[in-house]
Image (cartoon, rainbow, N blue to C red; front, side):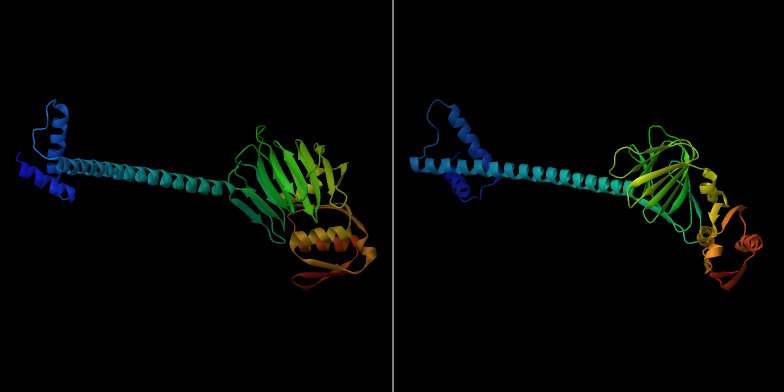
Amino acid sequence: MEVKDFRQFLRRASKGKSSPEEEKILIGIEARKLKAVTSFSLDIDQSKQRVYNKVLFRIGTRKKNVLTSVAFKYAATIIFIIATSLTIWHMRSATSSQKQLAVVQIATKAGERKTVLLPDSSTVVINSGSLLSYPEKFTGKNRNVSLKGEAFFMVKRNPRKPFNVQSAEVKTTVLGTSFNICESGGDVTVTVATGKVKVIATNKKGGVVLLPDEQVLFHSKTGGFTRKKTDAMFYSGWSKGYIYFNNIKLEQAFAQLKKWYNISIECQSPEILNRTIQSKYQNKSLDFIMKDMEFIFDIKYEYINDTTIVIEK
């Protein structure tokens, strides 16, 4: 290589205008120089040597910066992919959690009853004016539902997954059984038809274990329980279309009819309201029951409108 050609290389390289091929030539010359024991074959003075060394340094730095830039680009790409993947995973996890936490609510109007099949194939008959809430799918170690009002439960047995019903301040726990729960104003009555049921008050130790034809009443004012033997059919027969008047006052019987048929029954006579009735009706109309009462108690009833009945002596 001629010295003038070498100088032109240096001049262009010092200004950053050399081509990749020229840079390879300069680096190759330096490599041969380092290998040689004798002096460098090109006759250049010390000032030119300094320029030459600076040019080689700049070329090396430029290549290093290019490699670093490429490395950063790859790193940025990898970080972007990881971040995107994590975001998608979190979104899917959140969506999955939302699906698991999705709650089904079944409400009944006054005078209406509904039968519901739960995700575990348990059956619930919901009485009028009540609300049942449960997840779309039972996950975890328990099957949890909540109830406002009254419902009759026929729980599919699963010893590994207890079935819990939360009603006001009371939790009822079973493995597989049938029972009735009636919640009103914070007071909760649990009546067992079959199997075994445990009833506890929220944030309290212990509880009450009930067997068939046993009932417990939770008093919200005192936080205490009243337990007794009973005939479960009197309290759960409504789920099969029965209306039971189990030696109760007519005032209570009228309250049951109001709930069952969504109609108001007005009676101003304390003497009539304090009479007791022992009777059973299945899938009967309101008129049938009222005519029966009219005959038994020698009273008269009259419809004021579609929603009100007045009873007189």
